[in-house]
Length: 299
Ligand SMILES: [Zn+2]
Image 1 (cartoon, rainbow, N blue to C red):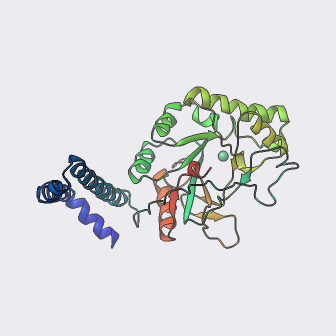
Image 2: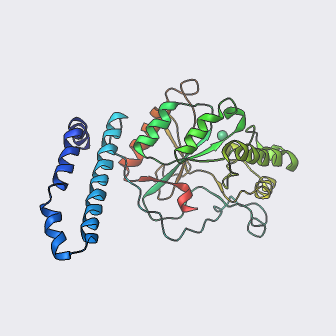
């Protein structure tokens, strides 16, 4: 049904826009409202309301057209407004290190506590730098959060600058993607804090989010991360690949607030493109009635 709407909207987009403008412009409405109310303010307010309505219509039309263009089964759901009060983020049971809370170490979690039907998309490493992916995400207006490793992004920092310009937060995933628990505190600190500095130098700020490679960490990892400004260590509840989903929970399902992991990978790494992976991600998320929200809005 939505696909049909999409075709319709896509074909008559110009006509639709014109019709929208036409309905708004012939004076009778504003003419009728203005004289009794007197002040120009009322007419201005009516104009503003009409503009707002027509902008929302245009955005909706663009979203349907984008979903159609990028081959999605359904139009992605729009995320609800984030909660006025941010949820309290705590470390998932069984994921604590000694003195975790006492030392004020970054919480390690796989889900944001919320009742809203939203999930969060996080994408790691940075090997694949596909311009089509940037376009797709902007056109669909799907938010995501990046976790970057220097050794795969250092051949093209500009790609991620463009991503940042489009509203994506660039976070820390170490310099060289090592198995951190196998390293001394000093070496871990170099991997994590060194990446904070790269991100500050290349993109203007030291991020608050850090994700340990492979999801492996120990107490030293979190102490090191905290020492250079990291306040959250999000892991993930599901991982999406170009050809499948993998689940942390036994029920193999999505839950409100789940953090989903994927990777910047292309045809050299798996059987498809970044847009192919996003199609697999969005088709399931939308089908299950979830919207994709911005992780930073909940932290
Ligand atoms: Zn990684």
